Length: 256
Image 1 (tube, rainbow, N blue to C red):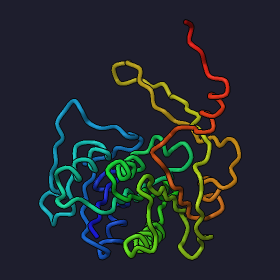
Image 2 (image 1 turned 180 degrees about the vertical axis):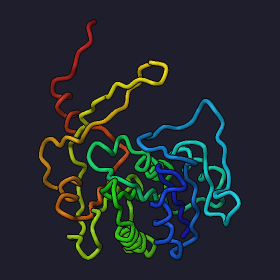
Image 3 (image 1 turned 135 degrees about the vertical axis):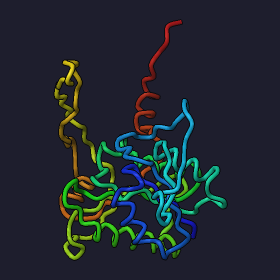
Image 4 (image 1 turned 90 degrees about the horizontal axis):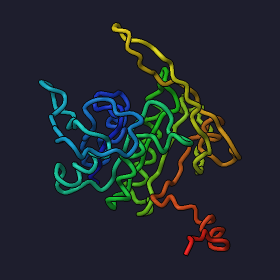
């Protein structure tokens, strides 16, 4: 199987190297990733300037292709031009930090995987639930187990979805298992610190924390708290279908 690896932490990030090591013998693996960090860039694509590519690293054995654009750019460019024939599976990650709850909407890692169903290719986003002291071995083992089952045909990713996988930062033997989950309801409570540059001009640095809201039962956030790997099937259709029925019963009116 032809497998494309991408991420949003950049081609130099330890997570994509851990993922490559975990799956490199499961197929024909290509790496096309941003040339630097593109975290929280969501599904942005580059329209107003050219994309540049180069083999990475310079002066050493090639690991992959570094792209000057976003994670979504990397996948689009790979499928449209760089890889012939195109990949049969897209893996995005392993991200440093969780992509659960509302983070799904902001994540460049998730957005690279979102290109899969858009382009008709199965895809998986993989994230590790920590920003400190990452246990890449656990994340790599979980990633390999899932990819093995997809490559062998034991598991199938439906054509209109991708899998969003979040992995607890625990030793592998301490994982509680794997749960199929829904996306939790949450939001970031942002705070902006005002600072000044050496010339006295103000600038602002965002901080904040994740706030969970609503029923957490069966969510990715709950699973991670309880030590479970979370696998959430995510679709492209953001329509709230129950709201369509409610609106149809009492539709908004325009004046005549």
